Length: 216
View 1 (cartoon, rainbow, N blue to C red):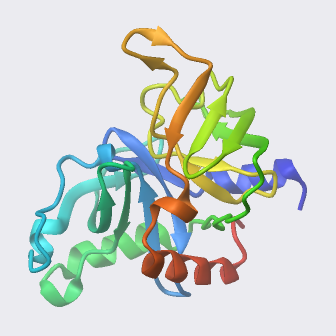
View 2 (cartoon, rainbow, N blue to C red; view 1 turned 45 degrees about the horizontal axis):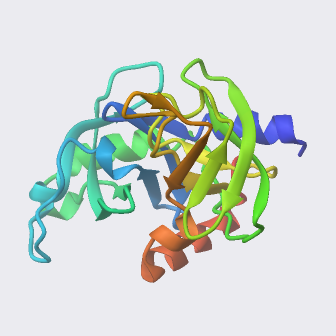
């Protein structure tokens, strides 16, 4: 598949999350996760390992890019410092049966993105603008990512969008915009890099979803 085909398919994996965006990745044949920026959540879940499913579940958080948010989701990981979060279907064993079914129905016809783990220092990247167009820029790779000369692909409202490599794989998440404290910057530091910002247990699970074939 050529680049244009990758990008066309990848666009269908991007959804609305709160006031921002997120994108689908596959953990297994039957489980879909959504990666987003932590600041796209309405609020952080309780900092307690025994918090209830209801406390970690957000009602009407997800929706299509061009439509209302009607789908609930549970937060399974969040790091407000790196600004990354991962969402999953609500727990139907906790009484959220209708919410879980709505999540599955929303996800089942959508493609998922592969996760990239390469470590080249500098390379081309693609980000999705608010108008739904792919913008090419340069990505510098370190523990986090730096976007160089991105103009519209990280404007307000694009937070949580994927940063893609040339084969359509997601390597990072849009977090930091072009304007900081009223000053426009051509280099945007601190975009979360998936291979470094996600915990090992979750990264291993999501990488196993690469076997689903990536954006399709």
